Length: 361
Ligand code: XIL
Image (tube, rainbow, N blue to C red; front, top):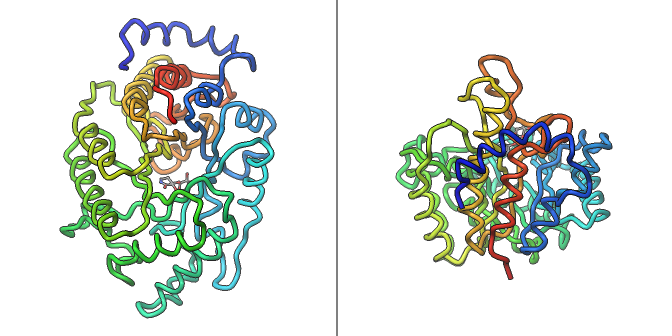
């Protein structure tokens, strides 16, 4: 369902009143999701777990969490012979205590790689290094992870290869078979986790996204046909609010094809960048909420879509201010709760989309 202009205007008008009257008795995203057998949650950075208003919000709103950074190679495998599970163990324990599921992010990526790796890895030993890492990390959490992002962001059409594969360290060392190595090792280490391929720039309407969708589809089709155990697609959904209408037809066609492959789908890193909008807060919040509503109504109409996670829950902790800050210096407002943990129009757009979704089995 697309938000009508009236509902949209209502969101804007209601913002201050809604924020001040919100209480623990309001329906939560978690509870609304539970009614539909849909997991809802967010990425967590370890530091945030020290903040009581944050942990209260996370407990109330999330039925699934994912570590924002702590399970990446750089942090979990800081030296060739040393793993550091302290932070991720703390998150997994927090989740268990609060009856939340955990996504694992991630086992193979070109970014945030351990610095030791480059000096040791060769084409001869790289597959073993990857297998050992996956056996240790996915093995450590065996049976406790809902789904693993086994390979993250393997496609980068701009690199110019016909198959669209990113010219990453992994590709340079092992060729395209590195994905097969990673998925096979993950299946061996944890037979219960749903093995996921995760990527960005698949959702919106541009030639760039369309090209990337085609390459991802080709990759998934090839893996499925060769019996590589990929079970789900993670759509990162780092979206942009432009204030202009979006055409989602290419995205819908892509989702149809992914459905035909029999893969589950997760929204893994949802946020809506407001950089292209003027500074006015209610205007930005309304436009961001509109993208949340339009996007979620689409994906949630498919029963193969089993989970929605935002990349952070409150605007106090978004990665988006880091790399490309707004030109006017204002803080971005890409998430469902504001920096004071109060719900924003995006929260209500999420709630409405979840409540309109069909129940999953
Ligand atoms: C980001 C984190 O949010 C930042 O804190 C970190 O500095 C860089 O990585 N796609 C992904 C995530 O798969 O792992 C990235 O997370 C955001 C883009």
